[in-house]
Image (tube, rainbow, N blue to C red; front, side, top):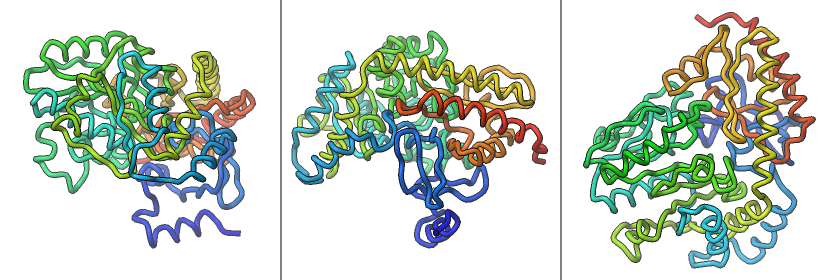
Length: 428
């Protein structure tokens, strides 16, 4: 039987670092990544036959869990008709109608193939609309790997201890302004857009202050800048209509990914008809993609969105809140201090040897993520059959497929893992 080690060694020969995305590497936690061969609902199985309760869920893409039977069947039907055409298809119209029908401020969307493309394109639209160059982002927020937005990013950039990326020129980031999350910046008339994760979920979880997003909206309006919500994570996972519904704040542009593809590669950006009128072929802002609106991705995404109602989000949020409280208690009873912040169905996990407050920005989150406790905790959980993201800057994703028994088993494992981590010497 092949092993995870054997597969990773094979990967190292033909794939840089052995992974196709740095967040999948075990660089920050040590050890060898497990190689997944299948998933079903809340579970994934690796090449050695180990099965884990999965809280990665493709970093939030799998709202219904892995390989939901209805999504698999929809994909079979779509694939039988053809996998890509480079021409308009009914599927992209149907998914766009579902999305715009849910989100009040979203009148039109254009599909792309990734969240990175979605954000990159939205920024281009904002510059085209305003005629301005500068874009403001927040420290620790990750908006994909386009050159101008990698500066001060969270997720894998922070995990690897990088301030940005080699290969990005000074000119590429010259028009990018970085501000601390949860602090409303003073803008001027050179700023085209403010780009924000409504819930920061790439520096572990940091929620917005009660008035942060509304005040950002006001500040953008004051100077004529556009407000962009990066909802690649929060879109149709935070709530039935995403962050706009959850927080009551309407942006000018939205960026989506993950859930809207039902587990397939996808991205989308959108806004009002007036804003999107600048896009080619009607306007002067060019954007294109051969695989944009892919019929498999739009079919899967439509199937997922058709299967979740507002009540499902309310139920999932309530279950996650109970789970978070139980996790917090179990870890604290086992020798560590914990904070398990929750926003709707999203939850984070911070560990410490001493009492602390829930982080409000990247600088505070970074101290906790880099204290060395997540590494032994992660491996102890994995040994118990619980798969968390292999990095302290990521969050936990509970899908609709996770049962109460899965969550109870996870809490029990967390108590044991916390005891292991509490007994681990502090790295020098």
